[in-house]
Image (cartoon, rainbow, N blue to C red):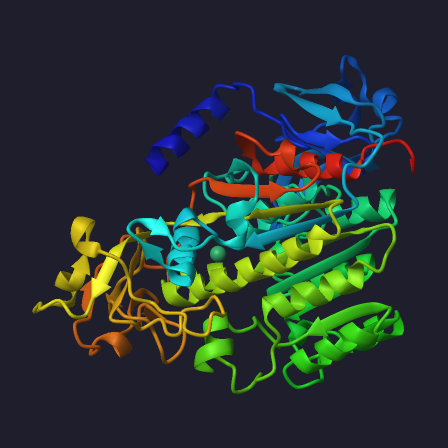
Length: 585
Ligand SMILES: [Zn+2]
């Protein structure tokens, strides 16, 4: 199939049929009025500058945009290969709302795109926004968290999650500009810029040149807040703080893996509160454990910029009481441990990092700190391990993290009671192919574990308990537990049991570089080999294309309804804060 397409493409080239130029922002982009972005035209052939015609609503682009673009006669690809001519105009702003049709003509190449530039009301609807993301959160995660945390009797939940009481909702499409499938970089970037982009990209459209940081930029939420408001900014995550989801609040790069540079991007924006893991990228290269290649000591640089730096839950708690200034908390060199590891089993890397705060602690500390600003704040909170534990099919860890995520939402909703000028948004950035299908009942007499998987009427209800009323099951390895499975996986041994020794590692690389079932689980009684349905380069399960559910409450929440593209969410946030008004322009 692929070979045939290539042949067809070659044939059309030979026949001299029109090639298509690419224009960034892409067709149907929605752009906040006054928000700077880079305009780029990529042509497939080399032209003289005078042979490229670009118009905007029929007018010469340089008149319409009030500026001349840089003309690159021949962009270079890998190994200096010719890519064709390009036009680049950086930091363009459009001060008037409306539709802009950009047309390009050069030789046989033509392309036309239409952008919609939108403005917002003059008056903000809310003073604060708290944007909660459980990375990878799917409907199954919500259901499992509710059942595990609250219980169920005769088919009705014995209690509600905090997120169950958010009164507005929308289903959100998460696909990326080049694929139905998606990752946390482009999904969260769409939420935080209003522009969809390509897998791995943050705050840029993914252009064709190899340099990961020359791509056409769009404004991030943090930059828009700095440009238009005096609000404080907070970024909280249980991942490395440079990881794709938290990075999307501030970063511009084609490659989410540019983590050392992303620390610099945090430093440029200086969010007032930054809490998470990932200290390895803040340490200069000669410090043991550093993942930097340069001598920038970002811990010292943030301190010099007035930040209090904390590295443990205890330090965070005392900083919260005394600190008026900016707060940088780095509690792990890498990703922080899952709640099940950190709080209950003391597995994972908890022995090495025994004093990590949880998401509730970090969320309340951030709100406490940020709410000192009379102008208000924007806070992004990510529960990263819902995704990071769903990849290796470690459902108990993912779901217990969901419960903690919900408790962080509960803490924010309680704060909101006395601060009603706050919009709370709760969503995932993408989904996983994960479902709850019934229960697994150890008491059932069966020769094989799979025959203890109870479905339909046989499933009954699980027997988790919560004697101490902390909202978490007293243990996850109860005798009748949720049967949770993924629809996509590498080869692995299904054990039908929670992984009490530490996070699950379903597959490992063999001598041919292919991922095969991890033999470490082969001898778990009743384990069965499941032959994967993913390519052999997949070490874990992958993201699903299914819509995510977004819920919200507070002023502005009425903007979320029906089906929305991920990029549309930004417009509701911009509207809520009146980021497209003319007051500060
Ligand atoms: Zn993921």
